[in-house]
Length: 401
Image (cartoon, rainbow, N blue to C red):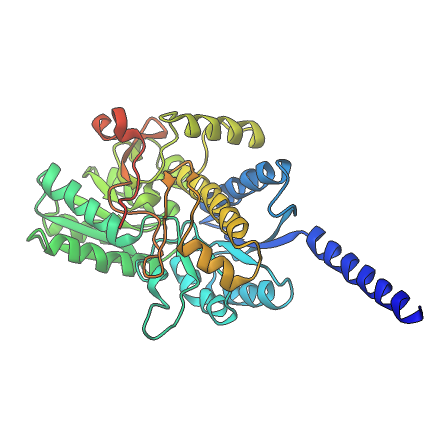
């Protein structure tokens, strides 16, 4: 009788413990620059993530558990990103991490998640190497996924826009000195070379530089007919403003960061006409985008999203992670990774509809057919070529392997 009572007590204790675990929230890391020059990207990404988490939690959460975000400001600093990664893994014991805006921070930090077998969904950083940093055969499994358009895609689009569509033959490349700028410059050089074009000038500058006169004068003396860029908003604005001071206006075509509020606002009219590849433009071109824009505006009391691309990709990354955890029926990192690589549920996102977005050998959700060109016009980014989003082109999806 005493033995039976002991067994019943043990069973009850085990059931209570299992119930307690089931009710615990799911911790998810959220890392990005929420202050500094990259903040418009980081804050927009964070707010898009929080919007999605709020919707999911309101609907009952994942596996009956609420998602709790553990937010950290990496300030776009590699060394701080590394510290945060270790804290989120070892102290907070997150199930996964969302974020990374800056290529350098991502490349420096995500190795700790790889070692811990915890998935990362890079939702903004675009350095081409990010999603393949831990590819086979050197690594058995890759825990790094991405929902942004990598720089190989963007540089190819920039080269096509500049050379094929507009007929420019003497581009000058202006890129910042970060990993993002220099790796992007290398991708851009390759894309131009594939079209038989070599830059007439290649100029570098540092984050925080406010005078681009010397770089622009060298580009002018070299006979440049277009300025191609790889940098972030504040410095990009200095390029546009520097050309205006010199009385030398050339078209600017660059990576998606030309859509940042810090470029548009700081450049003012000097930024009009700048062209960039975009996975998402703040326009109600699908019902999902219409609902997302309205929800974001209502939640954060804004009209223009500071970085629409960052917000949309951040939002979508949450739903992909939630779908993977649901399919895995677990918050174990290896099981989440396996679920992401063979996701059975279609996820209707803002950027696209994700139908088997990843495989074991392909951790890029975005392919070259998805982004379109945006153009800065009167303080906003609008569709540069209306035909790109006409009819059934409004929703562009990844081709199935």
